[in-house]
Image 1 (cartoon, rainbow, N blue to C red):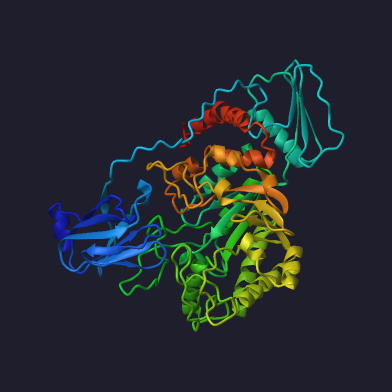
Image 2: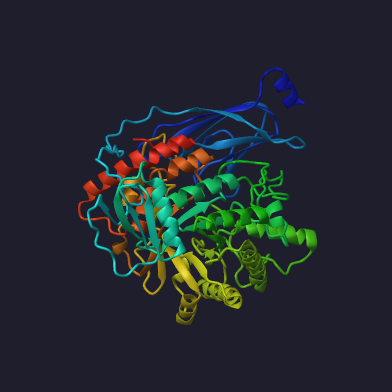
Length: 593
């Protein structure tokens, strides 16, 4: 009744959040004012990984991950003051405020933000000129060899995989040679990107790395099928050949597995926990705060993505992050067990009393790897993925099992080293029985028994090296955070939206990646687009464009050259002249200098 009366009188519950200045000890005193609050209600919001010290007002309670809630003691205006971290960017302010009342629908709250005036900075934010004089064959990735007009080009005697040659005569008609389907496709991509009309020239070109990837996280902020297809088109135009599809993590499970409907009915649906802090019908909101949405790909939609990618010479490697980062599957399969009474696919031991705190502030996201039911479940998932790829008529290069960031404290009372060995051997049992390869983050290759390590090598496509300088003895896809994580902010400017835990990343930084600096058997490079800070497709393209192109260039042309500044100015000039006009035509949001 109060809420209806408030709305009728024009007093709709709302919030004001005011940024506090940094104090000498490095904290900031922020203020949150909740207006026209009903007595006995609860307010939920999302904030990225931040401890708080209350100074005034009711307690701010952490739930799981990015979720916080405040119990409202009395009606009217409620003021809270709390110490938190200084705000590095406006996008890090608390968001997605929702009013919860017993017996009423959840009500999103309007929030007014009051930020401090942005500090002046003298840091170079990367004002690149882009005025290098270009020639006709200047495209991205850059071609290996070119001669103009009738100038002779010394031809290769042996041809690497993906090689092609284009000869364009005075009549402007191209003649294409290639030794494989990939080379023929890349030749057509080059022809599409060359300025028209075509000028007389000879191009000979090939990729330096067999693996040239892009990782897309759709778990924290979901991308529709059409948006994924647009990203695939961009990948194809850059001659990338692998989509690393991050589709299961703590925050969501994004692929339909028909034998386990709860994986998507529950694990891809988001709602506030009930009044007793139980997630009874859906997962809690993700960092984007969205509620009431079901975001996943049906089997048919996934196959549409597979076929669309393969037509463009792009393979898809699905990732199901395990044994940490598994909250969505754990909670979904608990719901499955409640419905069916079947505990044979259980992912977490009810008797486990482990206490831990994950990198993203979860306390319940680790698989009980000693349970045989864990491998029964993932065997069923693997079988469905294999079926979907086979039915779609496209290859399945590997299944990525994640393996990163298992928090200290997991598997309490058990030997952590032994648990890791059990897990890797269990996953290898599944892979070997199905004649498929595994992939994982670098963490899966560390701390194993020698026999397990050797066994892993036999069934491993690659590891993503993201946090070290490489690991000897394993095939490596370079994915270093400080060079290839596109979700990192371009600069320290407050209007940027990215993180900065591994520094700032722009197109100059990605272009500076030097594969020869890393150990191991380097088979390729990959750009990563994590989505914890994304809220839209516009956010995604902004973080991708143009910084992804440095990784694209290193995948095709591994050497960055001796004269870096000149090489980068040439590279950035190509972006300005050849890439940005097309992005503008398609209406993409991107970083302009």
